[in-house]
Length: 132
Image (cartoon, rainbow, N blue to C red; front, side, top):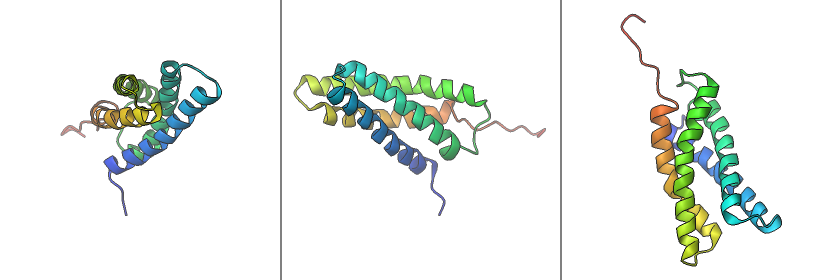
């Protein structure tokens, strides 16, 4: 059975949630790093993990750009997702929601943005011409 790109992207995203949550909880609970800083570090490390998995599995046959260019594009798009995630997390924590629930909600909201924009820009299919 061949999995579709959205399913693969979701599976990779699930692994990214594990990376994000483990780092966030570790930085918050064990290291006592402030929530905003811990969230930024956790998100960026999950972005790197997600890029490597998506690049080698989800979109392996698609890309026409060099890997460093794909990573730069993915990271730029994901920074938009990070802003979405942090805004949701901060808003929910401000109204008394536990940070773990707030973070999961932020990840869920940012997921759609990340998939749609990365598919369009990071792993855009190479245009074919009649001369090829």
